[in-house]
Length: 277
Image (cartoon, rainbow, N blue to C red; front, side, top):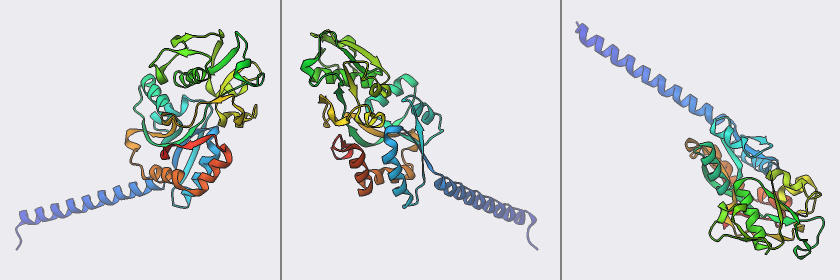
């Protein structure tokens, strides 16, 4: 006859093995369910058309993508930090760095997208030389894109900035303003609609195209495509950096000929691929 104690131990061992197997099966089920969930990607209106094309291409590889469109540049990071979306695509590294600092976030750039040109536009003047003394000039009001606008004004020869301030420069760093420009800081997404009210405005071609206020290619000066630091980034939380859905989508965005054709169609020559620079 079997020893009762040995039998109890054997039963207990069998029950433990059964429990572990059930837990493992359950975990696999949860992982599979998670992989079936759509990747929620936050963005803004200017990027939607091409991202929709990329989403359609990713779907052919089994990755579902749900685009979540925001109308401002603060909510996408807040929403991502709270875990309501999986990633976002609308900002460059300087903007992200500033957002992390101000919001107390720990968001990470995963991979670059496009570098969009930024220019100075005017409906009233055909050249920078025609700008009068005291001209009203609109630039982005956020710390980072405002710095880019100021750097562009310096490139145009309209102002001189304190050396070494880079993408952290502010209006306080203007050391020379010979035309006494009246520099007005506005929300960046509103700049495209200010051209009737100012003499010169910083403009982002993708937003100008949406607003239809002026030909995006008609800038009096562009800042160039060589500034890789301003490449738009795919951004996520630390735990999302290895998300295979996101990695697959990024690869599609960067390598698909269909996506590249969509970029060329919507942006013409006013962008460059940040991942190729």
